[in-house]
Length: 238
Image (cartoon, rainbow, N blue to C red; front, side):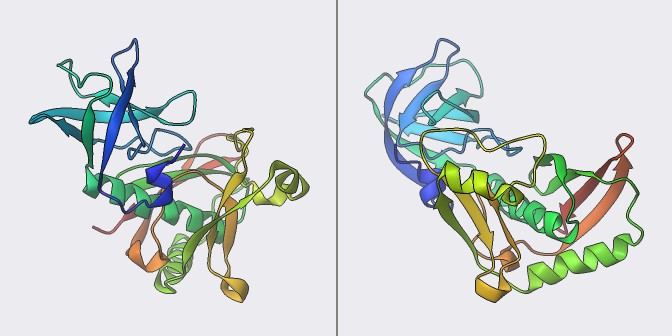
């Protein structure tokens, strides 16, 4: 299946065909443009258009075959199976998710500890770390984070098989979410190239093309979430 949100995260609209409806009232359109909720990143919102009609989409969730189920914002008439539609993203929201998701990867670089959880939001985000003690200098962490942004490093993807991933367990930083064991290869997100590479880890989310696109980041509250669990909140300086 062609996943448009993965092939080109900057694509804002695309034509498609309604393949099915779900019993819960969702719409499945191929090829999928909307990113489905997963990996701590919310599903995309937007609309689909057909025959001079518009259906607002509140979010998207993953279908059994890895596609996207579009969840209408309210109960209303839906395009029939086989209908040709235009998918239109809420681009501003998607782009904020892209910037923040890449920023959280950088946060895992400046705090090189196991990640126990995380959440991407529209301009805000957080990672939870297996961190026995609170970090001593929050300002130094923020400077290090923004230095990686300012280096304008390229963000690219690569693919490996499960055997290679199993042989390199250090690639997986998250303790709470493991890469899905699908039949296909595992996607890796690489930040930097060659000697300038700073991060490489499995991820299915949408990302910006270069770290400079993220913009200035602010480290917010650092919370105690258990004996060895610390939550680090960050936001875009919008």
